[in-house]
Amino acid sequence: MEDLSAKYLSRIADARDEAALEEIRLAAVGKKGEVSLKMRELGKMTPEERQVAGPALNALKDEINSALAAKKAALGDAALDERLRSEWLDVTLPTRPRRQGTIHPVSQATEELTAIFAEMGFSVAEGPRIDTDWYNFDALNIPGHHPARAEMDTFYMARAEGDNRPPHVLRTHTSPVQIRTMETQGAPLRIICPGGVYRADYDQTHTPMFHQVEGLAIDKDISMANLKWVLEEFFAAFFEIDGIKTRFRASHFPFTEPSAEVDIQCSWVDGQLRIGEGDGWLEVLGSGMVHPNVLRAGGIDPDQWQGFAFGMGIDRIAMLKYGIPDLRAFFDSDLRWLRHYGFAALDQPNLHAGLSR
Ligand code: PHE
Image 1: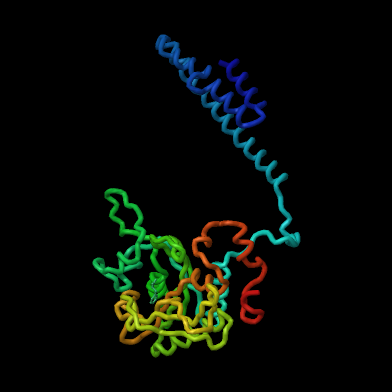
Image 2: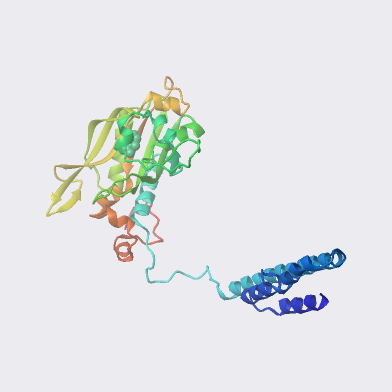
């Protein structure tokens, strides 16, 4: 047994890498290893012999196993040291002049709209993309039987049998963040919530994942007029067109009353879309005065507070502003597309220097 111990301990000490170490492990304590085979012989021994050989073999096995573990850790450390020595990056170097990656139009539009709303006193709030159906529907005054649930082409998360946690969905809009923010911040409130949303839909202007920005302002005397001013101010800044015309159309959403859909002025010339001219209209968002049931669900007293909310498609306004014809390309990760439509990484949009250059 001492021979076995000496033999394997020295082989372990000499092992150069993890593969060699694994070979030694198999040869010694693997299923058909030398030590394992010896242990199997215990059955054939007399009880007296077994009393001596048993503990000795177990001790040998422990000794080899702990030598293997120690060597494995040492080899791991050495491998890490080697990687740290060979893979390094000087983060103080200037960027390369050739443009490599670019900022995606959705990120660019998000930065731009955040800068504009920040100027108007809105801060950014966020919520989870996987949310309960309570936040996504019920709290927004959309009860279980409501047709809006079907209209939204919701993706439901799979549930294991016997799982009785509340059902979860991929959020179909950013409106659940209204409720979450009311709960955590109370009134008054002035926020936007940009982020990804999901619906089972796919064509030139619809993809199963897209982006919205929710707006929510709650105070004692907020009115539709404030909503209209904020949105017109926003469109003029975002599209960089003073006096761009908007059209508010009466509409219906379960979570706002009254509700309005908003179009912006546009024209089609030679199949090309132009924003801010002509007599055509393009729908860009849904909005309205927050329904009292929604305020109540968020823990805010509707007799004291009122507010407006809107939800706008970020991909949609990015397509309009940058003249991108097909929404599906947004999610193809095609580098040629990104080089064409992307933005320089170091240009931070802000209102003083200009939003996009
Ligand atoms: N959540 C609505 C949608 O996705 C948009 C909306 C938001 C409408 C807020 C009114 C108020 O279609």
